[in-house]
Image: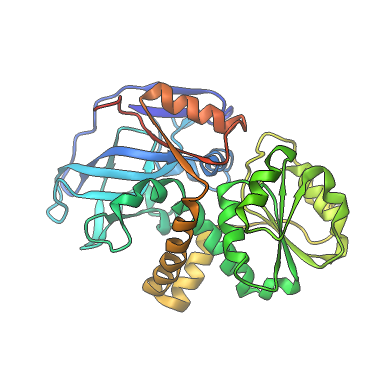
Length: 361
C-alpha cells in the first residue's frame, strides 16, 4: 500500500494497493514497520517541488500524486544483494508505504546507502540507512523518540550550530516562532544552554502555558504581542512560516533584526508576503543539508555524529517530561493523523507513530 498526497492540494490524499516490486540483482526489499508523522512532514509536502522532496519516492502518477518522506524503521524481508541479509532492521528515510525497494551500496556494519539512480542527485544525508543492531545510539527503548523527535532535533541541532557558527550575527537574542513545535523546542533547548543569549518564543495564546512550562524559553510572547518586542538586536528563526508573524517580527525589530531564517511552514496555508516589503534583512531559507556538508568537511562524519548524539541523549531524556506517543495502524489512522497536522489541529505534546499495516500485521 502507498499513502499518496495530491501535489496541487495537499488536503487531498488516497491509498493505493499494489503488489511489492520484483527485485533485480543488487536490490533489497524493506518492509516499512512504523514511521512518525509530524508538522515537519507537512513542510516536506509544502516544499515538495521547490526542494525536490517528491523525488525521493516517486509515485505511480508523479505529475499529480506524491509520497511524503517520513522517518522510521523498516526490516529487510528479501534481498538480492550479497552484502545485505534478510532480517536486518534499519532506521532511515522512508515513504508513506508498506514497502520500499532499495539498491544498497557502500555497505558496512553500520548500514548502507540507497544508490538507486533517481536518488543520486538528491541530498546524500537522506539516503543512508542505519542498522539498529550495530549502531550504538539506537536504543530499542527509544525507538519512538527516534522516529518522532530525532529528525526534528537534528534540524534543531543544525540551526543552533549555524547560529553559533555565525556568532549569532551579532545578536543578543534569538526569536523562535511556532515555539510549541518540536523543532522549536529542540532549538530552544540547545540555545538555552548558551547564555547570555536570550531565547524568545512566539506562540498562540492557547499554548503560552505549555511553552512557559518547558523551561527553555527566557520569554514567551503571544503572537498578538509581537509589537512589544524590538528593544534588542535579534536573530529570527521562523519555524511557523506565517507571513503575518514574519512581517510583525520584521516591523518590530527593523534594522535591529540581524538575520531572518525560514526553517519550516507549520502555518503553511497562509498567504506569503513578498520579502521586498519587509524591513530588515531579507528572509533566507535554512536548508539543513548545507550545514551538514559544511560540518562534515570540517569535523568529519564521525565528529558531527558524536556531537549530535551527545546533545540528542540529553534532549531525549528532557522530552520524557512533556511528550507522549500516540500509535495508529492502518490507512484510516494515517489519514486522520495527516489531516490533523495539515489543518493545524495537533496537540504539541503528541507524537504520532504510524503504520499503514493494520494492527497486528
